Amino acid sequence: MEDRSPPRSINWTSSLGDLGSTSSSESRCLLLNPDSFSQFQTTGEDATISQREEELNFIDACKLYPAAIAWSTFVSLGVVIVGFHSQILGNIHSMPRFQRDFGHSSEHSSTIPQAWQTGLSMGSRVAQTVGALIVSYPMDQFGRKRTFGAYVVSFSAIVCVQFFARSLEVLLVGELLSGLILGCFTDFALAYSSDVCPTALRGVVTGSIKFCFVIGQLFGNGVTMELIDRWAYSTPFAAQSICCLIII
Image 1 (cartoon, rainbow, N blue to C red):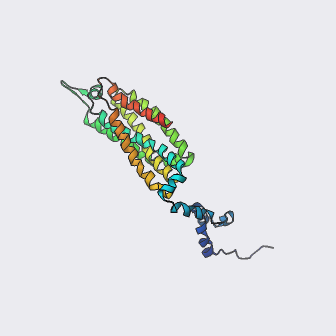
Image 2: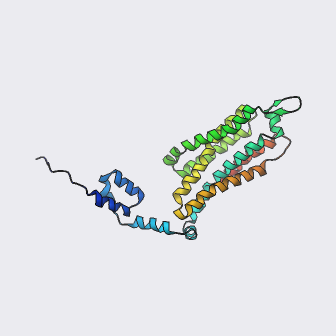
Image 3: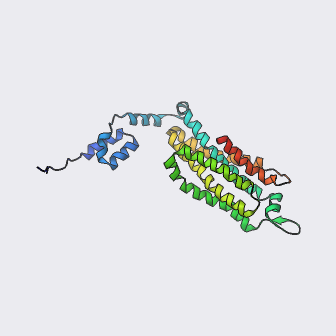
């Protein structure tokens, strides 16, 4: 005989009131799928842990989460490379040897056309914007650490294109490819630090990412040398691979 009894009603008022004792991820699951109520036991442990983390001060958070600080600092090394690259790119264009090898020669000097200077400078920044937009997919699919490691290895290979470039066309290709990788490093640092650090540390750790960018710019000024041969502009490009080796 077919059962024609009405479906069991759910007391949403009491059910939603119980969501305060679950974690945020469990709460979202319960709200989206009411059939999942039986999969969770609202013991209040998750809410207690979250409340304790929010009540921590900065000093106590540093003592309890040293590994989170260490990993966040490690991932922020990619931002150092971003600042380093942006600084050497502007310094190299003004080098006499670079202008002689890549520019158009005249009677008294060699100059790089304005269109190529704009393309080399803005091409990397446009590529960084594109890279920052597409990096979320591999981070979600393969994880933060694996994606970060793969991007660092890829950037090490792209440095070879910049190092061995002997024409503006090849150099532009190297800048576009490197920009796709560099645009992801800042996103890596922000996303990873926000995930692993508690509330008390999150603002300081994410704010220090700009500090890492400035450190990279300082290193970029130090590496730029006034040499007389092609090493004047090849040395800064090669120095980028040293930063990658430190991370690897």
